[in-house]
Amino acid sequence: MEFIDLATQYRHLQVRIDKRIKKVLNHGAYIMGPEVFEFEERLAEYVGVKHVISCANGTDALQLIMMVLGVAPGDAVFCPSFTFFATAEAPAFFGAKPVFINSEESTFNICPRDLELQIIKVLDEGRLKPKAIIAVDLFGLPANYPKLKKIADCYGITLIEDAAQGLGGEICGKRAGSFGLMAATSFFPAKPLGCYGDGGAVFTDDDECAGLLRSYRGHGRGVDKYDNVRIGMNSRLDTIQAAILLEKLNVFPEELIAKNKLAQEYSKRLEGRVCTPALPEGFVSSWAQYTLKSSCRDAYVEGLNEVDIPSAIYYRTPLHRQPVFRVEGERERLAATENLSSLVFSIPMHPYMSLTRGSYMDKLVKVFQ
Image 1 (cartoon, helix red, strand yellow):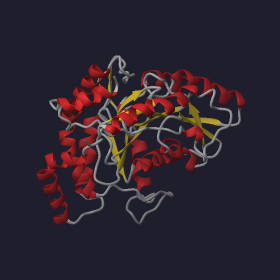
Image 2 (cartoon, one colour):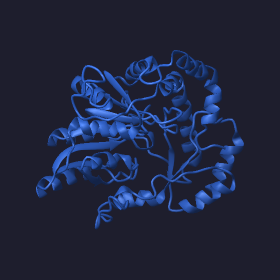
Image 3 (cartoon, rainbow, N blue to C red):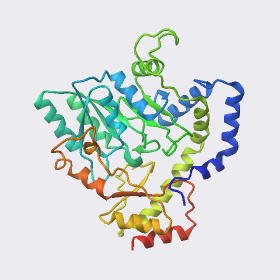
């Protein structure tokens, strides 16, 4: 039993992936080769945006967005505390202050109500300038962008989507990666759409943002790579990774269907035994993780381990308690986040799990009796 079975996925796609890689080896354009631009076009079509700008990894994608926005010291960037470190690391890298927002215990995502309260607090204090909101599509479920956009528009703050875990998710037919002025994603192998190394991308409908992103990812290039018009970075998606992603994108819709079927079976079998994930009306999750919640977490994790079912805990230490960000006196305000970090755990979720293997599901259910 694998938590995320990349080996089985590769066996399923081996002939097509190997053929794609061999083609790259033959033409030799390993950096910014034709597959990179083909992948950007195909992914833009899938997500429903004008521009996809690929880059070296998901953290770089967030940092490129910060560069386009001109994030700097004195700026406040609002983000959830219950997420991976990179979400807050990106604005902090440019000297901005991450302002941590509570999460909803039902969806695990950023709480719009607390977001508005913290924006008002920052405005009243007058020490920081509200610059951006980074909402995270945690575990594959898009954040509540309809509510978040209203708040962002009301206070004139740029809304950014961190879709590192969200690709394949939807809200009323609108796909993750298309929310906010710009959206970042990651192609880390364990992500819903993952490569065999590092990779990332930024999505946007804004032509000016797209132009700046393409410049910043290549050392601030102008008309060519020897014309440098701004300080940028070196962040490009390798051609071989783009080739792999092209074949994975071909089967991505089928994989999402399989994962949703598995999620439905999990919820059906585990309902009433343990707190299963919420799925608001009109929302579709990509199920980057299937995450449960229980005060008996440690006992359940031990029970799963005893029957050789792997599990994982995301995120045991919220960002406001990380040493580099430690914020004193915030634990009471961020009580929901504190609660989630002590209760949640994830069980195996990937599209190549067979639902006919009754023995696995039976063993799983017995752990929660």
